[in-house]
Length: 231
Image 1 (cartoon, rainbow, N blue to C red):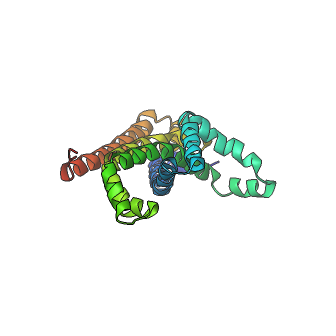
Image 2: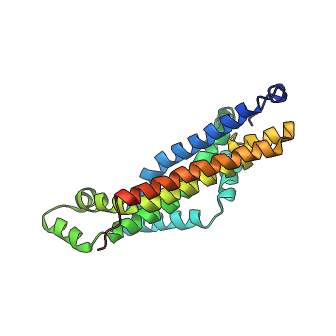
Image 3: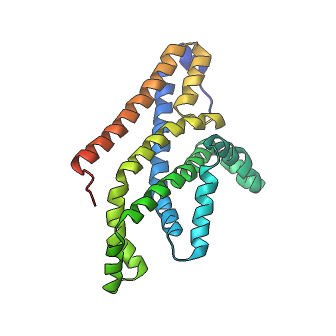
């Protein structure tokens, strides 16, 4: 579990820990989002697959993850999942910042479950006639998805994807329960060591607010340049 230098805090440099926590929170956001986008696309395609096995697998994953609180999933991936591994693997993980790894895995599954439903809705919003026309031209199922359906569906899906990004950013704060040295964890450490509650948690609150407003502004900018078109 991360440690902090109490002497550093007593010299008034606690802001370094807060900045480090903010940096890690942003890293959790970016890494999870980069991994979740292709993963959620695969889940969405599985749920729309003509093969029942893939459809049921996608359905089970989405419903199983969405109906379990993120807090419980964080605790499972940090405390429960390593128990299934050999001792050597478990010791290696705990020696290599496993708190952050477990947080990314939990956030990845949780975020992908919601993103996949947005992507699936975007795919289904593409008029069926376009799929039929592509198949009439001789395109196969996968080629129709890649060349005709997905380019349109992803554009439709961008606004809800940005909204899910905002949710992901706020969800990174839950990683503090497993000792991940993100923003809320470091704010708590600073407060415990210095009793500067107002400074520590004001910084954390302002950081979450600023990044959230930036993401919201990105959504508004996109909708301004690419307004929704009526069917």
